[in-house]
Length: 624
Ligand code: ATP
Image (cartoon, rainbow, N blue to C red):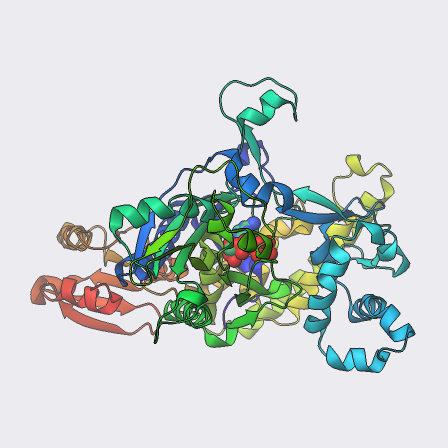
């Protein structure tokens, strides 16, 4: 079973060096993360897998790598400056801030139904249809949500509705005292050159630039350059991987939503419907084909079909110019649930037209665009067969690389009981856990006596949450051993509790003895491909061979040498970071020139000759 909660992934990431909070020495910076040694490898592997699938395995896609900062006019004409904003609402009582659509998604069914019926109020009152009919047409929670999302998110004029309908604050479970939704632009601003002018003045605006919120616009800017320099004909695509920045209102869920992240985007340019020749694929066919191709990519790297779905966006979610968008969603653990990992959009000719100087009046009208007087070019294509010039359409598969890394970690994470813990030890543990929970009560009461929250040594709310979580997990022992181990280490309510400090090493020891954490990452994604160990580190003959083997393997993959613990522990450490193969050099090797190769997933061990080893490793890693 993959990860049950994001906490497991957060804890593993910290413990083993996948992801760390950014600027840690200064208490971090809201939702910025640094990738450690293993995370950096994983990220490279994710991006390489995408890059290869796009630009190596096909002959109709070119890659680019564009500047992050671009002329501000790019973002004016793409529409981002005016509309790349999210509606935000605040609860005046709790001071909690939400993206309005996320707040709606978090509502219980009853509140959602009230909002839904309010949307239909006038039609029901004027007898156009009945309440029952409306409910029948939109039977599921998701269908209702899709319908009301747009109506209630940006609606400044609907001020008061959130309060009238007692919209719940998910942080407290009680109705909030809500402000009206207001727009907040998500682009980070900075300036090119030394500027000291006040915001909004001519001087300030002239030097203002934005950190790109998507990589796509760099591709559109280079459409002609690539077309001309690579002598491409439609259909063809341009791919790019790179950083993107969004000043998200509610970042969170670890690296799922961050303010700095990486994207992997393809713009696939195709002929507009009116210029298609007999037998050529339509925009709809290309869209469907890309949805399938991208779905297969995720599956090919180990995502189970039961946790990946295609969800066609409802009309109310679509951008006005988009003909269709299908999101690929992954079932993330815990409360996060289904979340978008990639969107595949049919964006018609909107983007290239928006940046073009000469666009026919009728097209401007259809695309709701103003004539672009700033652009010095027209991003069109000369079709030699049709003898016509036109602006291509585009299909855009857009995925997050950082979100993909999180997705693969969640899917790969497994805890396996490799040894049943002795019943007596489990009983003893339960008794100690009971004592910890009781003792925490005292700390909670002490903290509550202190009226000034700033002076409190403990947070009573966090302690209560910890007690409840610990009691629940204890009732599931021994299966929850690792979970308790993580909880004692990381739970906010466990901090500074003396008995927890005493309990920690005992749980840790038992968990290490009995539970194996294994990341069943696809070999292409695994940060380390092979680990080589000598059976005894005090035997120079074994150490020599093991070091030589690891050096040889390093020619074609990430291989490491380790002799810092006993063999069992070394295997466990590699399982935890997803290393597909371990090679052990033992005394027998000195006689028969063979080593033991152990498989991460099956734990099967086979003897292989040193001569055959590189070939066998390549074969098993599917690296050729
Ligand atoms: P959402 O509605 O969740 O904010 P979006 O629909 O705006 O996302 P897109 O603009 O379609 O997202 O971005 C394409 C991909 O980029 C997403 O599928 C996701 O994988 C990734 N992505 C977008 N925003 C973030 C973010 N803040 N942090 C990490 N990845 C992101």
